[in-house]
Amino acid sequence: HEKLGDLLVPGPERAEGMAHYRLALSLVDGNPLATIKIWSRMAYLQGEAYDAASARDSYRKAEQTAVAWLAKSPGDPTARGKAALSKERIAWFGTLAGEPAGAEVAIQEAIAVYEQLAAQAVPGERRDVALGYKTLAEVQQKMGKRQEALANCRRSLENSKSILAESPQDGQAKTDIAQERVLLVSLLLANGQRDEAREQTEGALTELKPLAQAADPDLYYLVDYVALLVGTPFTQFATAEETISHARKAMELMKGLDPETLDLLAKAYDRA
Image (cartoon, rainbow, N blue to C red; front, side, top):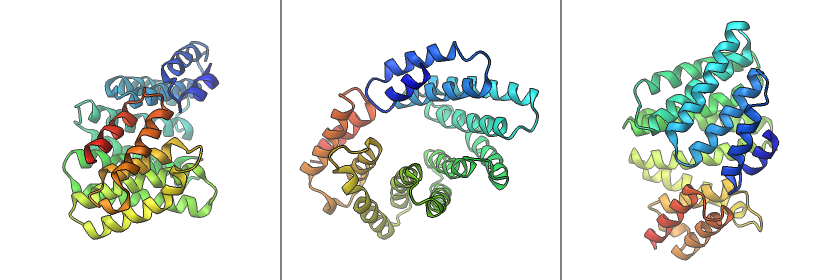
């Protein structure tokens, strides 16, 4: 059931994917890592459906499992990492749900754990450091801390680029960088740094365009490409018709069932 859920997550059949995850959750038989993994994936689906409160609650379940795991195995690096990640995501989805109190501190504490584990060469923790700084930047952006948000977004991007430099075929790092650059452009504009924003927009679009225009594009690259086009004040990079066409393609890939791609299509029409 877990593998079936994984297959359905990237596409429009997300409700069916959630059902498989719930069934998988009933079969994990107390395995803490498997339990955390499933709660996390359920939270991802809830977040993609713009249900931040439910995503936060799912990560609370994951955190409870990680804390219980740590009680039995104090200092276990995997348990520490999962507890920290759950804490970070609770803070993020809590912010989206309108409850930002303590989010910034919680994320900073989570990053401190990631950095400790990354120094111990625990697998996956370098990426958690990069994404933790991205989350911190996003929360600070919502708090109006534009300069701090920009600095942490740069940290996120630098960490992801370092990972990619060491593993040039790392597709996940490439996806992370694309998403971090979308955030970077937004924060540069918010800080009045239009020249660099234009430069970063052009660079990101140049890299994303062939990926977005592929016959069978990766949805994440296509969405990032459209997000840049509909969010940029620099209109010379694509016509309104091109932007609408790409936004419609993303929406159709999700069969009109995904809130994010529907929102991007609406924004593309608003710019036309």
